[in-house]
Image (cartoon, rainbow, N blue to C red; front, side):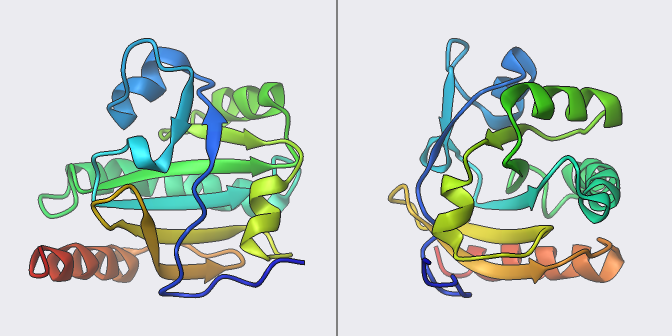
Length: 172
């Protein structure tokens, strides 16, 4: 089993298929014809990566809350343009992920890790799981925060994200 990643570790670079076409490409700032996505393609300074499974009740609950939270974050003057959200469906097929997103009207792009390779690289065995990662400017990403298990994104979490963005602006 892979080492369990911790705050300060690099997040693994992985490539996944773009599932919702134009909508995902626009949100992520990808080329119109992009069929694949990797974190290194993003211009955002931070990404909140939710790791979930469509059959996990806690994951479903968290996704509903995170979807609303992501909308709020996109309107926040500190976070807008600096933070993106993505979800990664572990052991879910592309079809499962597309249906899940449509059924729950998830605001942010969802991707499939159908064979669990990415999940395996994280060294984790618990879902849901969320990582806040920071761009290093060279295509690599560093883990800033890890949320293990179900959590409810609230105003305190919004403030944590604002603080991370503000601190990173001082290090540019």
